[in-house]
Image (cartoon, rainbow, N blue to C red; front, top):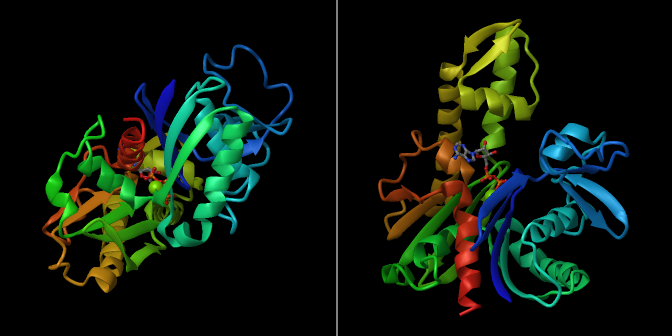
Length: 317
Ligand SMILES: Nc1ncnc2c1ncn2[C@@H]1O[C@H](COP(=O)(O)OP(=O)(O)OP(=O)(O)O)[C@@H](O)[C@H]1O
Ligand SMILES: [Mg+2]
């Protein structure tokens, strides 16, 4: 069988889109703890991957059970065991069988695209070979996924011809970074490919400090994100509303991203369209008003992986 697979491995979450389903898991890799292999693990399957005989826990399973989490932001992430584990786990979730052929499209942060794309292609080839599947691999800068999600429909046919002509700007607001790409008649504008060192975690760090200052409650970033989602936090058994803290910090983050984008795009008058994607675009939707022709794409958090899937489908036609 021939399959199309779109994988977007972010610093925060790994997103996977196939014809069968969309799924995501936290980009966390931790050590395997003996003794947790109990069959009735809260009814959820254990997220575990085997690299050369050594087991690793992934996602929420790692968050819950690992005593050691392998950091995902070290330099050389692509070459790390943690990255290989995330990639292998994502492929494992596709349930491919020996002998299958898969068109796999994935991406790299804009900042590492040029330096690491061969490395990533080699890594995917290796992981595919171990699973005895034939992989046709494409590697793109991550924001390109958002473009292909607009450009192709779910069958891989061109949906919006006009995107192929003129200039299109794409902003992918992620967990640690915001990636920016400009396309000119489908070509990447070299000077306008890069990463801004602000993302959702920038706001989370600030909110975490605010919560401590206000109520001496010390949450890690994961629990800060939960509080942000709920708009409240429980301190000594009492619920506190945090919407004003949240709005203030999200507004600041949107402003920071705006001023950085302006250093590259200026007033963006020469861009026919601006696409906003990534989970951060969903989170900041009320605060992103800086370019009047900018539009948040549909399902922004999944848009990158979804566009990669649509790109991969073209290879199966
Ligand atoms: N639908 C949503 N609504 C609100 N916030 C969201 C939504 N989806 C994701 N987010 C927030 O956006 C954050 C960033 O998500 P995303 O998956 O785009 O990051 P990432 O791709 O892992 O990071 P990076 O691109 O920096 O590697 C999430 O951690 C979450 O806080
Ligand atoms: Mg991302």
